[in-house]
Length: 496
Image (cartoon, rainbow, N blue to C red; front, side, top):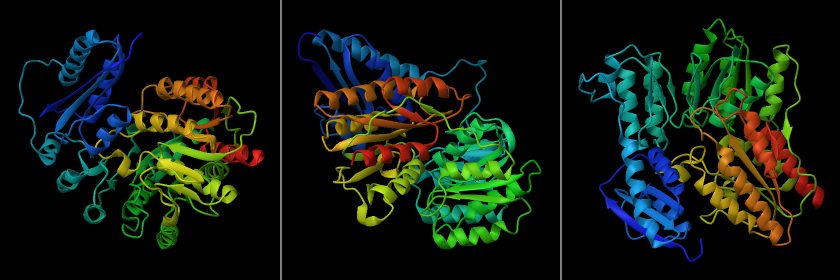
């Protein structure tokens, strides 16, 4: 490119495609010759912020408008870029050809379930519409997995109480991970069958257990997600207890593991008492101060099963300490929680959008003078746009900002593999890490990057290939998030 880039922004009122389809459209158009940057998205508040952050001038728009923002090398590239947008949108709407026989589609979840013998309904609609669909499925006698987030807690309680009354299970809301009958739902890793049954009030916490157990050669009977609020004081583990009953009734389950973000103390105590009534042993992996981290909890599981504890793999090495502050940029909320708990003991209070205490809640700038860790997968960050495990745009943009901050010495990241996640996260993460390190070096500073890469060798992305690519970009990569967090803290502490 020899001259200044040319920008083209247009609104398409009434046009609609879901966020995942538009993410692919943006990627396809960005790869077209002469296109420097492309973002095609519905004009939600958050998407407009992202597009503005990319340097585009965004006209006034409503969430019902589609925004096409292009930056091209010359004005001659605008027409082919727009043609690429239209082609990609058309491809996203194209349906596979069938036999020619036309059947009227079902108009409700209940009517859809009446046409087959599916035992579970997966609800993935905007949060404000999820309760109606989930209740319809429960009334049809089916278990429900609610992938949607932003469901009011009162509605969650009503759904879970209705499910318990019918001896059914509600997984979620905001349940991103489950493995049922060997099939992964949402974000799930490829793992072998085995003796462990997992109940997870934490998606990425569940994935961390799956990854570590798989590395140790141990499989699972099932992983039942229950939603991140289930062990809170309001919901009081309604679905966790129901999931534990299911696993207790399964003869193949030799050990039940309950994993969660920091729970309400009284709910944790109540749950431990409930576990004593089951015939299957139960081990808890509940994050919190003075509690084992997820890697230590996994090692306890292995010991309980009489299995050896393996060495947890590391790729690359950040050889030298770096002075400055620690910044954690996470896609997984539980992985962020775990890192905050581990860092707080050594570095003091941690600022976050999901803080361990409300006095250290980040403002809209997502910056503070001290240790900062951000969960880019939290509800307020994903409203109207894909989860960062699918779309890394916001997180990578923040990584670039952090690399320009002279006070930052170490960056801690997570990369979560598996079905449902980015097909090749290293393809975007590795160049971003390389650029961040180069930015700091050009400014005369040393920056270290430590990554937790959570996945298995059977995952579609390939654990070894992803971890090696990140290491070659200059990061130190760990399979264990706890080990990655401890390493990041050590790098900061050693330089102090």
